[in-house]
Length: 104
Image (cartoon, helix red, strand yellow):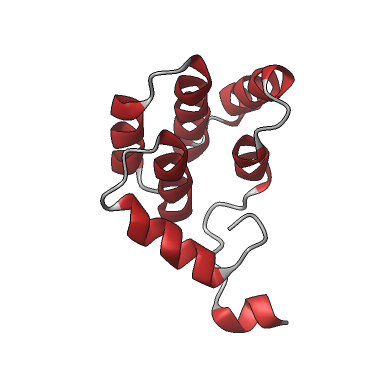
């Protein structure tokens, strides 16, 4: 998913249908640009790390770039190993790679 694989995107979205993993649900919500999936992620987020991830994804999907920038910087300062947060920061909303694009 982080590398832009279309197949990974499809798998993340498929797994999200029955998952309770906040990270997987956040990834699916950002990929699908679906705030309802983020609401599910929020219900399953019990750690501060997970709740922060949900909050920064909400800001990103709402287009609140100033808030998103502050949240993602704070989150990555505390959790520099969180590749999902870094991916969300660099992810171009609205860009869905096709299988042909990922092969080029």
